Image (cartoon, rainbow, N blue to C red; front, top):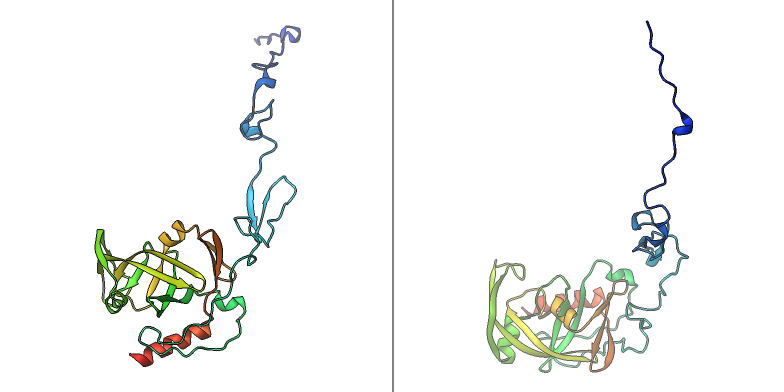
Length: 251
């Protein structure tokens, strides 16, 4: 015996209105601030993308960043002092410096190199490196001794283990050093430690305090100082190699 399945009364079935229907206009999206939809349903979702040094938002008309402007809106290499004057006559910190007459190499010359240049400290010509990965500004111990720079105890001594071939070095002293790189001159506190790579190391503290801007393509640095913006250019690799050779000859 089979039982007959009762027929559905379609007329009795009513479609219930969507919950809160009629009030969707009061829903506000916190992404585009439009009404009528939630943030996760926003039709105007955008993604900020960096492509070939141009910023654009998906869904927007592409607006390329002006390649002639830096992050401050300044015209790159304009209204700034771009050239490093020739080194003065004398010695490169106890090494005779024979000035080179070189033409500027293409920017690819700097592709795999950190910024290297020369500076003046107490009338002595020194080698300087800029390394944004360094947590400190460092001056070589020999410079402090030979130039008779005043030192003070470091408030928080620490260990450095990458500046030379002698293992970890305890940094316990600091010295205020006034230096000049071209038309840029400044005075700041440096940690004192033995180094082999350079005489002065300008690290992340220098970049942060001076709001320094780095141009990766040319490996130049824009420095704000005394109400001016000064562009620092690196030495060419030919000049760097010549310095290193003369340094080795002088040892």
